[in-house]
Length: 359
Ligand code: SAH
Ligand code: SF4
Image (cartoon, rainbow, N blue to C red; front, side, top):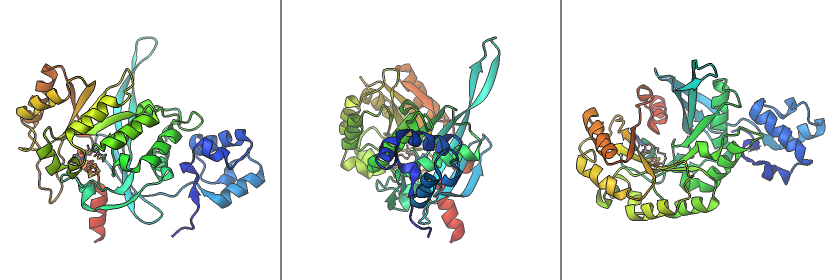
């Protein structure tokens, strides 16, 4: 194992102010780390030599290694990163087309990027449909390990530092179970001297730890919230997501009602459609009732089967009918494009494949 140096990517500017002075040096360091993306402190040319070698002694800049990369036909790329202790986590770069109108009225298309990051190795929540859950929980990721997933993906794809990118905490792990490090990563991503990814462009997806949703609300980071609902009654939800025994649907809805949602935004409800389990119109009806009075949008996700999974992918017509019902009732509802289906984009699937190959 590499010698243990703390990753500097896990520090906010405020953290570094306790350790490095004068203050303007920290701005310079952020510029080298996130704009010029240098990999050694010795290359930070405008810092005094002494400071450069002191930083080199105390901190590291790169700790993750890309061990596998899969490109989907739609351009999405799935990464498997190895951590210093040899555990692995996944992150995905999703590319969509953004239409930009030039001043002369002509149109140009630019890729719009979203990076999906992991927050833990494994997960404690243990959802029945999720491959990440199968391997159990190993450990929380440090803030620097979350930040580095995005930084390396920028680097690997030559994404300019001023490019507007979205971040979703929808990879492996339950972000609210590692709130301290996730909150720190959100702050580091949004630093104007760093990657400038506003919290409004970042979305935390949670299985519904109601007390932690309240805690997140108190931090008032300005981040978006997505709830993995997947079922509309407690009995079924507890079967799919055992966490529902601790935090039932009503407690989640109450926490969502208390959450400070940006005036232009909505809370996203993810609904994983599983054939014959929750894809009927009766469920859609109940969902409409549940969302009454909440500024919500629903995202329907096709269950993505994997070898040995006990559930099946729903029929396209059932998903469309479900969506239509919600739309008719005035509930905003999208169907998540099966982005990267051919690279098995659902969380945990690349890692599992890789472990399988090694067995
Ligand atoms: N733990 C958090 C965030 C990571 S999971 C959460 O549960 O919200 C991110 C999303 O992947 C969740 O909405 C989850 O339901 C979905 N997911 C898990 N397994 C899946 C599968 N086999 N097919 C499709 N989506 C899946
Ligand atoms: Fe954990 Fe989310 Fe997977 Fe559930 S769906 S086991 S909360 S990662």
